[in-house]
Image: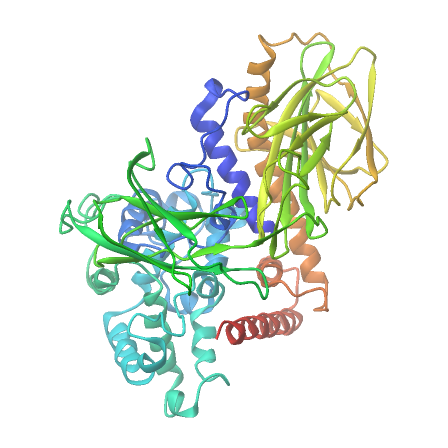
Length: 626
């Protein structure tokens, strides 16, 4: 879940910096365009590390030429024109050996957070999550020769297509999470796994299986017909000049603007042993200009059959039109992923998952809690709180009665100017004794954010705060601009001063887990005197929220580094069952080895243990999926 947390922080930062000081915290914030133009809930993908749709190497080429080629070179071999200026050699990203060994998720994390010792800057604030996956897909195509790809294609047709289908979607080889976690070597090794009969891999050399792994990887990318040309470029020529490929979010000109498509899907119930009621109504919506100014152009309804299947025929389509479906079940609205049809297909599949509802909150917890504190004039503090609340159960948590809060939040005594990032007291929140309540459901198997801010008067030299929480807290982080606010508390662990990319310094404090019902107690005092109150509390809160976005990126890096080091030191145990934690541990182990902090024997032994555990977990997941 930690990676999901980082992605959410990046999304917050992007949204805030785009609106700058004109951001009004008192008003509703428009959700990411195209994903939820209606009241449909956040889909899991907004907080998901893995690609929401298949990565597109054609789009990735243009991004690579603009952002990467100067350092890494036209064929991603570390020989760009700026390489000599850097004083270090950029990575040969398209080296076949490196590509074979690296799981895409490892490369995605480096691209997202950077790698300081290798001179690699972070791109989280410059490229969207989708753009990062697209550019990684393009780099992959540079590493695979046309001959290797053709060999893999031939072997796939002979040995795999009967079970997995021509497009890899039979026994699914295109699952983005699974493919992101597996290197080509691991895919090649899995071909000889117990899930396959011996005639699948009999007589195949390691080279054959690696060629097959390369082709399988390609099946998880979009626009597969373009991949052969991309691979040819990597071997024989400099990539085409910028502008010769379609720009992001554009469909090639071969797609007729007025084409119609068929949209299908199946409603399933994600709660164990629960069924989908017959005749459930499904709504299809389509939007143009989803990235800038969403314009609804399609709004259709139908009913699913007794098996949960639904179908929309002759749906008007145009380039880049974004579609999603939704339904309301037990008073809760559920939405599918939002997808743009690939230009070489005439159909689009939009699966839709619903869940049973419950009032039991035992599956909920606060995975991350952040306080951002700064002066608001001479006699007040501005405090912004951000909660990342996880529902790890298979039921959506709702209120006991309609109109009542699902969760209630406490505010410090004397807090004023309460404002929310999204929603207000008219449509989502209600006032309670000592704070407020949120009426929004907390969806199963997902996360939700709770972000709000307030002004806390400070008449004396020191303000003492005792804060309780509606759920157990995994970890709380308190941040303040260095040299402006002093924070003290028995539970607080001083994590020192960290600098963001804008040159701002933040003092960061981290707490151990906080049990439900326990209070976090801390005090605030002024480090500087004579600060003047900015014009208008709302403007002050808006600026504070922008600063929060910058500070959270710093805090995310601190937490991720700390957790990675802890993961390296721990041995696999019954509690060590999360593939994401294992990936963190492997990445941290590699970093420590390259820095000379681990001897070779210990490094290889520990890495083998972690990879074996990761493979075992993924094998179990595959068996369950089958």
